[in-house]
Image 1 (cartoon, rainbow, N blue to C red):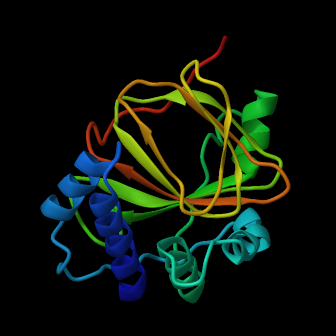
Image 2: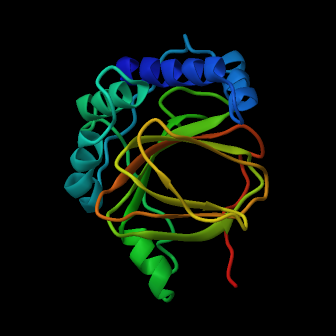
Length: 206
């Protein structure tokens, strides 16, 4: 588990050096998290879609030695120790949300409920299955994403859809709506919240 947390810290450090929209968020995370805190291994839990698609997402994780590749390797090394959860299980009466719920999972790594405790940030993994649409949604939390494995398409606000691949970084300002679509490959990402850690995720209809 320590190897994975070290790989996450390396990803944030590289983003701080590279600059761009996420630099303020990653510097905040690097400064505010006590990276030497003893890790608290979670109670392992998987989901059918994780068992079926995690390895496929990690297989396409960019160039050997890249941050995305190192995180993918670290995730695979501890895949049987991670706790994966589902989302929107209470919205089975909405066909698009029911389909999404069955094909999306997250694992909390840093935060109040994470492997590394922190009350300053929330950070984790998300896995979006093949041919899956995450409808437009928004939240107060500022959010950064790193594409670790697989590929897909992304939309922020009223801007056109754009494709993403391992090594890409995406930043969402507070309140901005965004949506994701996978195609032939599942998509593995690292996400980071640095404000409003208890904010709700609201699906935006219309």
